[in-house]
Image (cartoon, rainbow, N blue to C red):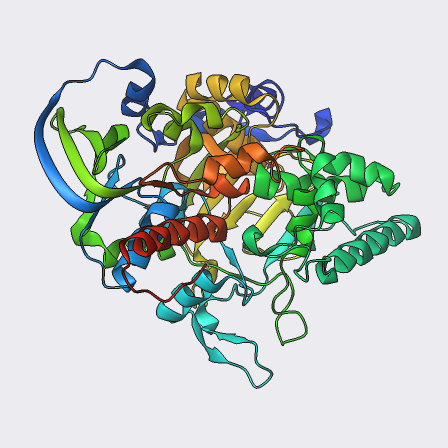
Length: 549
């Protein structure tokens, strides 16, 4: 076949996508142009058009009215968790309004012939006993199935990530684990050992108030000023202070900051950067590896689906909450049915605004001045349906794992949807590819929303083709979701700021819930705030419940 039938990807399109491959000219992947052009797919996901009505206005007046005791605006993990907490306590008079067709927020999922797959959050670390709400939910879902003789939680084995869990591609081959140890010098391994020892020190650190320095949820963390001072510097500054300047340790910490926060180390609070490593490890010393996780084919969508099913009769999809305000005897909200074009006025005794701060600022009367400190990282997630496992080079090294990452890429690589399957013969699967768009968020977000699906198709295939030459020959479909405001950015000085604390305070009968309120976009924080908001409502109404926050 003539060379002109191939295209070289990885340069211009990758740079435009926010991917820094670091490829030499010889390493840039060749993709067969005619095959790539025939791959079907499109951009899926959040209802940006209707969501922008909050910004643009011009909506009709209400034509009907409904009443409920508790209005929950937003059906992400925080909103679903608030509904779960109310339902668990026997409070049934509530409504959850959600813009999308399916509730779940960034824990939503997709489905292909080969498997379900995540469109966002795809795992849950083993919970600490301090995460009481998460523990209660996992016990209810039969994920935690008891306790071990040593007192640690016992987990349903099907949900613990199967081996091999993770691998890293570097020097043309795969190694086990994410830390780039392949070819490392003695000095580089000593630097890693020093880093690990420091993170272990922080993991064991107890503040002067008797609380752990780092745990999940952050509401359980120490308020010791000496520890909180870490929030005022960046993770890059902390690394420089420790003189950890080697390329490998710098990449490893950079990967961690991209993974949970969508930021580079210079844009990540040192407190939060350390939290990534020091807040987990519940299973360490109790028969589990410290980095072991819970996962499902659809990622955290599995949990979202269980929550959704428990409150299905009180969940109203395709409802965009336009306005919310406290009244003399309760809360009043207007919501647009985006299918019918009709606005409903909802009157409630209490309300929970379970939405990101940038939306709450436009919806909740009087709330806007509190949210100037919040910023959000845009992400692009692509699901690549393939008819067989991705092709490997002749000397592939470590075999296909659940999590597969490239050392010379600013993407987060991909996870394999069928990894938890018990089938013995490899077959069709779905690769979920994660790309945080780094740099100034506003510019990255605008550019991302303006680009066509073909741009993301080419960028994703360029990234996958480096470790998997010929990947395009296996692709049956490639769909992409652009998350313009995927996660709150924990920039230096934000997580323990007064602005962040103020954003969480109730406004009369309106409570707030979202992982934004922690400054860290992880499941446990969203769940914590949803449950806490529901408990605040029940406390005010003198409705009995067993507290979880």
